[in-house]
Length: 210
Image 1 (spheres, rainbow, N blue to C red):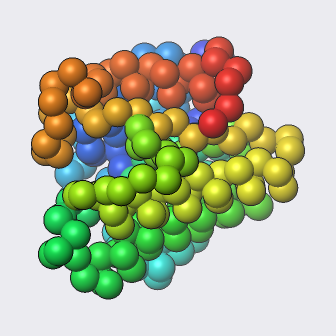
Image 2 (image 1 turned 180 degrees about the vertical axis):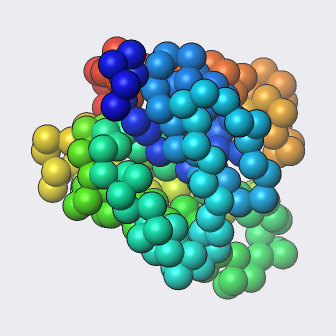
């Protein structure tokens, strides 16, 4: 690794609203970034390697990890940012929506995290939640997503208990400005602000966990 680099990091969902800000923040702070994307490849920059992957199936996740195993060995940092949201009224939900959100959020996070703790030099992991994480309440539009993200919280806490030498955090921001989810403007937060907060978690400037 080049002397001026602080480390290597994998950011999943790197072409999304938050993902692009995360990539920019870590590049600006002298990290080498592996940026996973599906359809929208990021503009090429120094110390950035874009890696295409389709996480919609277990095979797609495992193929991605196996193909890039050697690339990821020196990685010390991981951000599980990938996690599409199902935004539906309860009356319109189907069981497939639960399966889809559980796969996209829980299965994908588990597969990638499990691979990293067993095959890389991982020191710090951040998983993405949402602003009501851990709260038992009714959800009108994001029930399947809320169920999945609360499962990711349990996963995060369990990994932290098992792997005590690795720092695990879950960052749970409000809805991002620019997101399609309908909320009052004052309840939203800028992607850049969230990205900076996640950077601080990763490098240990913010010591609070969960």
